[in-house]
Length: 177
Image (cartoon, rainbow, N blue to C red):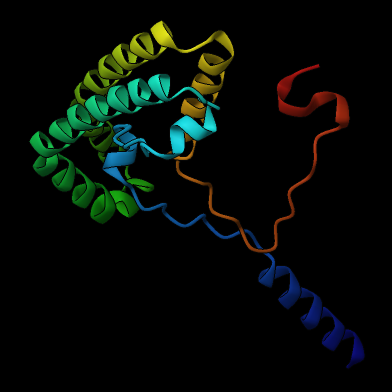
């Protein structure tokens, strides 16, 4: 009787810690298209701009960029909303149906890539403008800040219950040796 009870407990614990399918991450079309705005007061302090003239030029360049991105966002608002609704409602079915998953991927590419390209062009113009009056050190901090801001838009992987993440050995962090 005790053996049967122990076997039942072990069997239940195995079932309790079995891997579940990861939850579907909510799709955000604006983040996928890299649509975000820079804080005009935060950026000069982050890149350590001290001169008022450079600070005002930085704010002006950022304001122009934000206006262009707002315009792009406004013009494509309907497309992005429809895509977000489509992906979030049908996304769960796409796991079991590869044709549907391919259809979703194509729809995302057709909608988001042109928007992302136009934002990237505006971003390059902003970087050229800022590079013209920022010092090398400030420009390096700007690029680092910009990358960090873009990285924050990427979706986070959901944590799975009962699964522990292992750390990489010290010599192999981030794929560097």
